[in-house]
Image (cartoon, rainbow, N blue to C red):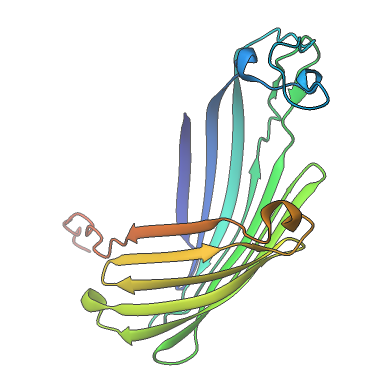
Length: 231
């Protein structure tokens, strides 16, 4: 459960700056009877009748997390070219919680940065570029990708676009992806192909992802107002 607050300000004809804040209330819980412990492995298999030697002092608890972020949006008029760049900080208050009778474990701050670009390179073709970087404590992730979008039909109410691209999760996986947009509807899929040491567990078969979305074109007009006369 959370509360979000954001605002957008146009700083020039094609540049928009936005900022946001978030307050989240989360709950953690655990059922000790359903947890598998190392001490319950008898050398051959898991034996639930063996004592775990573990005692949970708390079975549930709540944490509050505060986050904030910035985004810059650049979109020239009369062009499909647009760029978004942003940065977010999560768990600013480093909330703490532990199931055991010991000092609570702090949830480290998480830092995310991203770049999303759609560049019109011809009347019917766009080049998409994206990058994402995340870091929390000593763990980090970098994902980069590119794709081509080709417009089979450009009339907005009857638009048809096909897209194909390739992403890379550095030191881990290749991510081929494809999508199609027809009018207000868009659907696509991607598939992770592991090349890191994790392939011994995944057999180079990562997880497929699918999406379907509906795009809202129509925006409510501003309310009518009567201009004050100038004397």
